[in-house]
Image 1 (tube, rainbow, N blue to C red):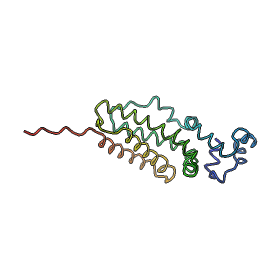
Image 2: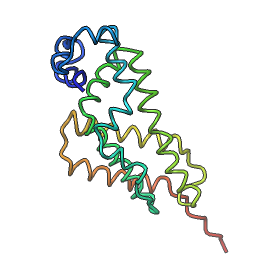
Image 3: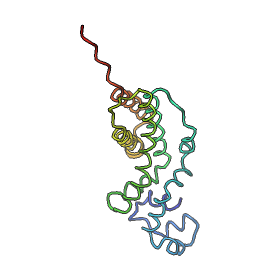
Image 4: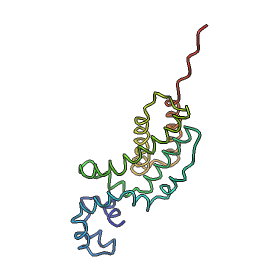
Length: 196
C-alpha cells in the first residue's frame, strides 16, 4: 500500500497526502473524500490490518494448515518463528504502527484490539492442548505464558529483525533456546518420591 510505504519511508509526521497519492497513482482529493485527512487514512489502514497482513504475508496463509506438534518445545519454537516471519513480512506496516502507538491513544487502541490481543487466543489455544495432554503443569497460568510468548515474539520479530537487524541465525538460535526454557518452566513438577 502506498500510504504504508510513504509513512514508513518518511515517518508519519513528514509524510503528506500528495506523496501518498502520487505513489498510489491516484487523485489526492480521493484521500480527503474517503478518509478525511492523513490521520483518517492511517486509522483506516490500521483497522484493516488483518487484510494487510494477509496480503503481505505468506505465513499467515499457513496458519490454518500449521503443523500439529506433539512436542511442547517444538510448538513454542514454531509459534514464535511464525510470528517473527509475520513481523518481518509486514515490516513497513509495523514501523508505522509502532511509531504512532506512543503518540496517539487511538492508534494504540486499534493496534491492541486488532493485532496484539488477536495473538493471545492463538497462543493460549495451543498451550491448552498441551495442558490437557498433561505436558503443562495444571497450575500454569496459560494467559500469562501467552503474554510472555507474544511479547517475546514482538521483541525478536520486530525489534530484533527490523530495528536492530539481528542476523536471522541469531534470531532462530534465540527462539530455540527460549522455547527450551519455556518448556522447562511449563512442564509439570516431578512427583515427589514417597519416603520409606
